[in-house]
Image (cartoon, rainbow, N blue to C red; front, side, top):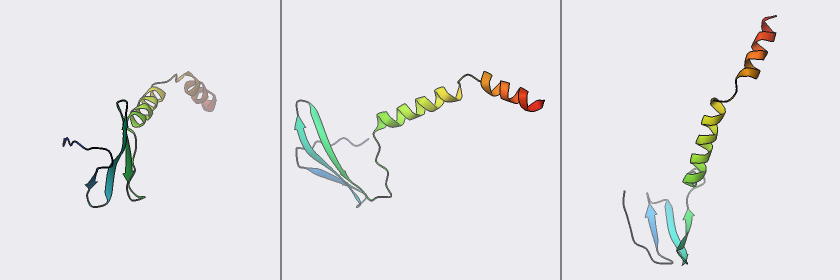
Length: 75
């Protein structure tokens, strides 16, 4: 992992097509602006983790309804 120090209004460029700019720093909160091509997805990691956890929970959910449907289809 590369760790950089940036001040407000400073930026970094990734792969010639993505720019990450420090928009503001206020009370311990850093606001970033990300300029990337439309074909590059930019996601917040906590949202990705939340979706992954939700998918895991759904896949281990109650299967009794599915089992009831299977039983009815066998008739």
